Length: 172
Image (cartoon, rainbow, N blue to C red; front, side, top):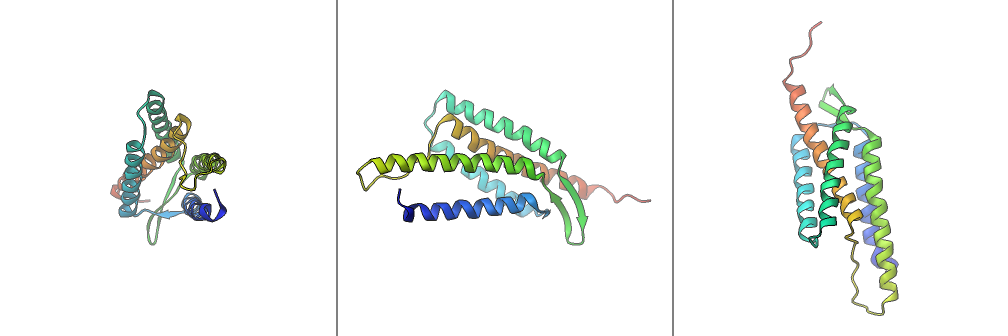
């Protein structure tokens, strides 16, 4: 793969990682519409990944285990998420370590897959070779770990913020 063709993908990865890291490390305003929008995007991405897969037992196990571990990590992260009332509304601060580790694992896997596919295409003489991201069980596991973690986490934030907003203010 030539540098010119890899540059847009590299820029996209850096932007997405930067935005995700900012959301993970800073306090965020609870905006149900934005959280639901993120859930829709993650759900659509899950469907696209599922439709593009070759059905195999190991792939199915990767999906189930990835979603299961994502659920457990999201539940654990929600226990350590801090909610606070501010002048502009309810805010939450995610546990930066869990979200950061999940993000790092997926990014590292993408980099490895891109490197492997680019070295394969450099050995081919065809100018029509397109980059293909690996669809092994480990890759599928990590993708669905990422998707499951963030989907379950956003659902938890929505539920918890709804419960916090329903509670009457404590009187001293």
